[in-house]
Length: 125
Length: 228
Image (cartoon, rainbow over all chains, first blue to last red; front, side, top):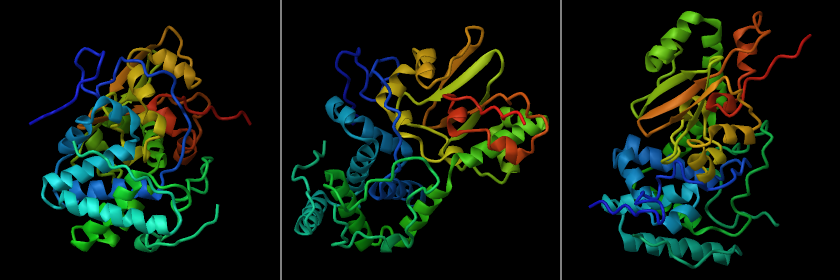
């Protein structure tokens, strides 16, 4: 069932429906994509267009189902990454617990190597 | 910051080391193994490792897809614009049926979305946006700039296009109407700018060099050639 969140103060609009609202000045700074962002883009396209695991519409639905606070505070490829994770579970390609376990393993490896790694989790819903 | 490669997340899995755009005036990307790691970066690595372990994807497929993304740039869009400027019959076909006209140039737009070319004229200036997400003709323009995907650009362009354009340094005279095209997942727009005066004797590659990415978004005008 569709659970699209609505945006507070904007007459029942879904969170992504921002046309005509006012989010202030446009930051025109440009930057190249980081390698992890390119990988997210590449994997997402491969999983839907080459592997046929879901459609672009399903990807949009998972992004649009984000709550307002999180939608506004996450970057573009962060939204894509969360959508990919959730769709892989929805399509039963991966399980929630194996993703959580692998994330803990990856985080621990990077921590040991001296990088700062956050310990918070990204909510599933 | 010391640069170390203490883990398995190096360059080996995509076989090249040229993620930096050497000719672009952008700051270099943050080194992916130097600073603090974001939780989504951890998620990317974990999900990728699981997909590789299960054989859903291979390193080679990911590398090829990244190379394809890196190969797409506004140069292709500029080439199409230059052809339209140089060949009026092609321009008419491009405006009428973008998919078929691009196929003449061996450009296959694929099955994901349709493209529509909107032409700037002395009466009309066009600008593209995607209020709902970030739909963009990546095939012709490469990866969109961050500002195209920003809430500021997405929210304001449809109600105050002249104000937004002024922030980009583009002043549209009152006599010219501004049309905003709100892209969707299924229909992406690209602007055909007006050919600048004084370019009558230029070749297509010379014309293409006048056409920036932003001119095809509508947030810039083509460069005017210097008088010689």
